[in-house]
Length: 351
Image (cartoon, rainbow, N blue to C red; front, side, top):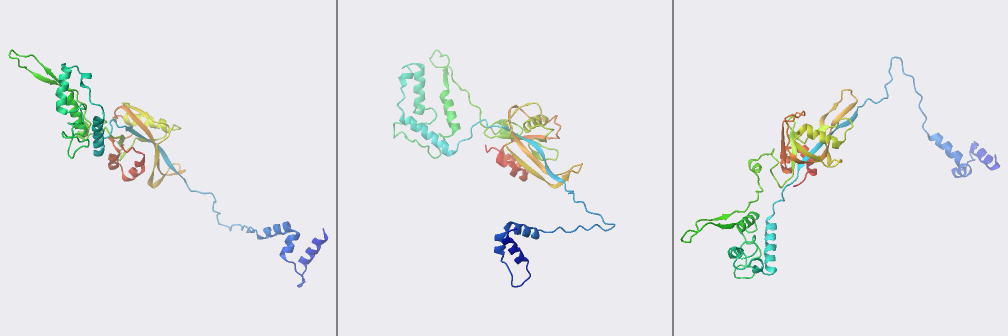
């Protein structure tokens, strides 16, 4: 051992009151040895284990708490997309009429004899129609783009109906009518004159809309409709069921539609990834029969589906379903429970 360390050790172990060594000097001579000694001294010492007294039982350290989990179910958001464009707002109606009239004023005048030969039946019919509407355009009302005194109004006037789609359709139908003249009697008078009517388009409001038939797919043609079914407990919800074995959500959704709605629907499950999920917690958790898990609720994973043709039929379903409806988003809010509605409202289409 070096002489320096021997002197330091002797001084440190000396019991003379006038002999002392500062901590800095000790650490400078052998820091590692002192540091390990201090760590060992500061470590808590294990308390001796006392043997249990006679008649006492040692409590088991193994945890007896159940594993909490949720049931997983696949749910299908089967929808019928909008079949018509939405109704225009009053501002949009006035804007489109303004654009049509402005275009009529800015384009070159209509070349009548380029399209109709003078004196032909087509020319006679053209003169009759242009006298009535005063413009080549058929759906902007009576409008003269070159005469200020006759009413040069590009914008729609207050209370006018020229911007309404129904009024424009009627104007086009009237313009499409063709006069058919029958035989002429001896005095030169026409015996019968009738008009050949054009085919009228189908209305935007259907019989199912007027009857309020929520089972029909021929309603609310401007909105997206979703299929909801009525369960045995009286609650309305989307077709749902648990997963069987190792089946995927896509396969489970196809099976659920067949079991719930029958084989009369031509459907398509869009993609393999769910649109979203919803957690419904039980008021009181349930324990499985083997007492290995505690079920706290159900997690629904929603798969998007489209119906192409057919209709739901609950006659042979084995899920205890009693009724079905095709509802829009605002109608679902009135049908579902508030808690269920708050969980799925953000994944539904606004229109």
